[in-house]
Length: 71
Image 1 (cartoon, rainbow, N blue to C red):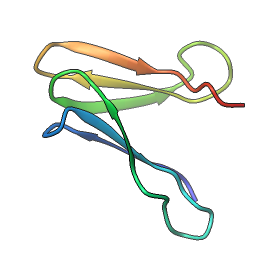
Image 2: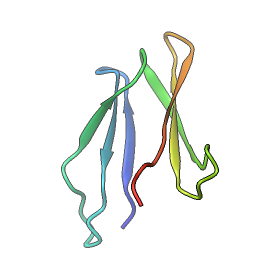
Image 3: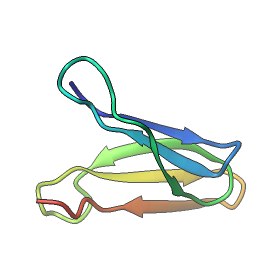
Image 4: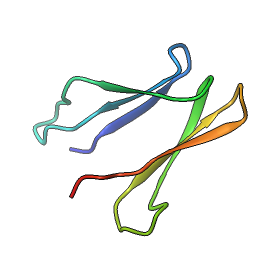
């Protein structure tokens, strides 16, 4: 099962629910973003062969990047 990533513009947060491998998800963890996150992209932004997240924050015209740091 894959993971679920959702930008939450009402709370200025990014919600991540990890897949359990049994068709369900773990409880959502939230991470702060800039103002009014609306879009995201998943790519290897730092060249370490791990997926990272970039979040577009519409109200302040910024992008916040979250790098994967686990093995």
